[in-house]
Length: 275
Image: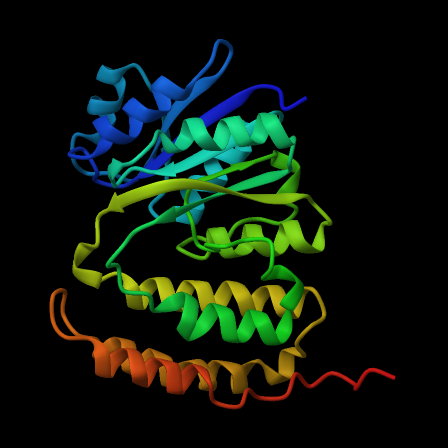
């Protein structure tokens, strides 16, 4: 059976949206479950808001992966149900849907797949799909939105420490794939989170790319000596993203260039050819 659930709302300086995120987690919690706000180095009133709503505050260093690691370090059984604190609106209670899917399927990891209409897609088509598809294709089919922050995870899925930043979900995808864990997707309807004017996209791209290449080397899919060539390939996408259109500007030309860059031939892995 699925067992106990710990809801971990992760955020930094998200006092304005915490009532929505924690409200959903508190409504989703069943008897015996826990609800945490994992405070990733906030300098605003996030911790006070969380306590006023009845959540336990877990103090963590800045960085999404560091915050999620702090939750894993304190949860040794059941499932951790992660959700981001910049949760503005959802069609349904997403943590409740993810919890129910974990109970129904008894999966090792449940990934909430949502519809966020109108959001610019950059990291998935520009980096994640091309390099994961080339180096670790078995990690692609079972997760529809690979970077979704909505997921229920059994602690054993994390077999090596999370990276410090935005590569945490990528790392979990690879850990589950190579660990032979059962992963299921859970459609949760419409969702709206903070776009932040797309200013965090370059950092997300860097962290996701690093997590993919780290995982490829760790699991024997890429020779360490060849890694600089793959970083150089990613640099082409980085350069485009550094000059991406502002929120609300026409992005047709940007999207076309991104597709062209993603379609470039990839470097060799540096590994012996399969017999």
